[in-house]
Image (cartoon, rainbow, N blue to C red; front, side, top):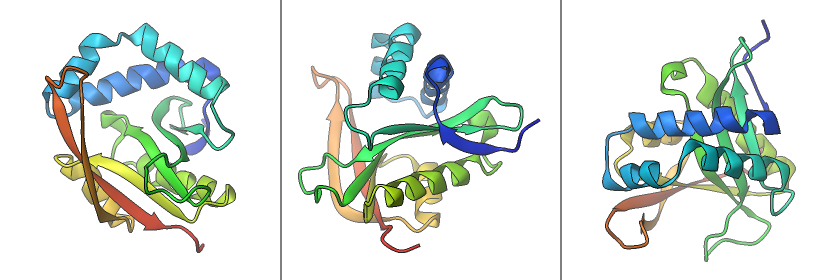
Length: 180
């Protein structure tokens, strides 16, 4: 047994990350976008994408972190890096691009450890503000994040499939990470 922890993802864990992402997406309240994404991208393609993200990120500040249970099993992950928002201050604004904790492992501290590791990593990279786009309907995630000190900054957007068949509304949360 090892202690519950968070660390950089290993390439060999890409399959576990992809499977966890699919499980988490499948466990969320069904919406057309999630259904479309799950139908368009199979596990093998997702695994390959995560392996590329771990092995060959576009910049050094792009990272995939994993939360690991005492059994050694990956129970959560986060993809983080510089924000690409049009109003982002280069070198100052970071982004939590993806954040997933296994539904079966929630409420055990993994999400808090993972979020703290994201912020610590951002600070080590010199970022002073962190942002996170959250589905407007994801009350559980929004409650978790705002409970950790994040708040809406007024920005919102919609994303969807290329044919606009399925769309979802997002709100942006932010937090000042300039102080320890």
